[in-house]
Length: 274
Image (cartoon, rainbow, N blue to C red):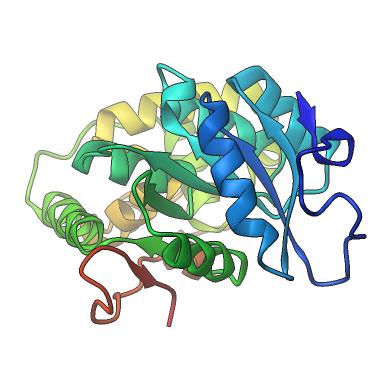
């Protein structure tokens, strides 16, 4: 791993990190690309590269070792970039990840965002847009180009249509309904396990079965499914700690997809929550 403070080529080595500075880690297999990006950031007073990594193992180690605001992550560092993004966020939840690649397609764009990435960036991005992306993502916004915005909107439309489409109601056990009830109340797996007298791992196993039965992939989709199909209203008595099921909780606002603003550039555009 290459640490900036020990790197004599850096133009920022003699500058202490000021309060409010955006701390960035560069994770890219090509040294020449990292050198170029470092020179771009050296011209900015509010951005500082704190470490560099040339493979996934180094990237995971770096985000754990150095306080980091933004990670520029080359997706080809891993054959399963989506899993890599999930792993990094698990190790460093506060780090915001920008996935960087030559041609990130529709499926990967949606998958990376679902996994927790907050930006999708082309390696051919101009320096000014790169700097702008870093600042927007650090400020809590999501960065996508025009094509990526359209892909995400279409993916959510397709998801909503699928969740609302009529289908045969799958058969769910009382234990599965209890766990679903806990999820819709916003309870964590640990809390659900305590309520129904089992272990957290058992709850996770049940949830995987529930996802398969209902054709959903996460807690957000499960909550949407329950709302559209009034699942718990049809299964009274299987609710944790109550005589009747509660109204399904709305999906957490932090996970809701905001409608992007009109593009400001033909190449890159930032979209953030309203």
